[in-house]
Image 1: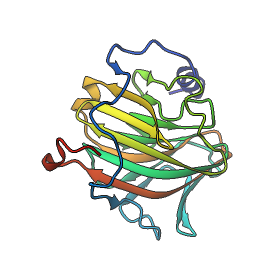
Image 2 (image 1 turned 90 degrees about the horizontal axis):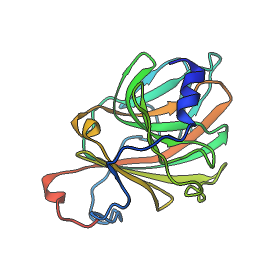
Image 3 (image 1 turned 135 degrees about the vertical axis):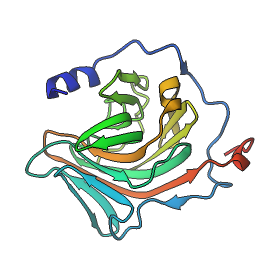
Image 4 (image 1 turned 60 degrees about the vertical axis):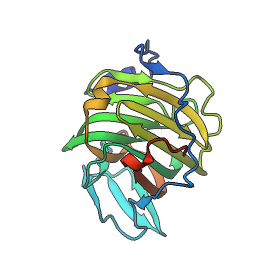
Length: 221
C-alpha cells in the first residue's frame, strides 16, 4: 500500500461495523489461574522470525526494535501460530513509538495480512484494531481513552483473542472489545511491527502468552 494511502486510512475516523461490543462481560483478567509461557527469553530471538531489514536485537534483557537505514516496515513474528490466547507484554516508546502487535496474521516479505493492535504515541488510538491490506480501521478507542499511555516509560498491553472476539487493555483499562467473523475464521502468527519512515525505537519485555484450553471455559480470569 502507498505510504500516503496507509496514513490516510490509519488516521481517518471510520464508521465501525455493527459487531462492536462495548464491554467484555465474559471475563475479568487477573492472570491468577492461568499458565503463561514466555515468548521472549530475554537473551536472543529464539522462536521468532525477522521480516525486513529493520533492526531487532536484545539489549540488557530487553527486546528492541529500531529503524534501520532503509526506514521501511519491519516485523518480528513468532515461529508458531496462535489461535485463542491472552497475550501480556510491556512496551516503552522512545523517539517515535509507532508500532503494533499483529495477531492471527501471515507475513510475506514485509507484507502482512491480518490484524494489528495499534501501539502509537498518545492520542493515536493505541489498543485499536487495524486490518492490514483490507478494511483498514475496524475499531478505535474513544478519544482520550489512552490517557494512561506514558511516552518514554513502560506500559502494559493485554490482548485477549478467543474465537471471533478480541479485547484489548492498556495499563489495566479496557480499550476495545470487538467481534468479527473474518477474525474468527483466521489463524496465524503474533508479530511485532516497526513502522516505516525512520526514527522509531520501541523496547519490549515480559512478552507472555496463555493459550486457551477447554478447561479454561467458565473461569473468571
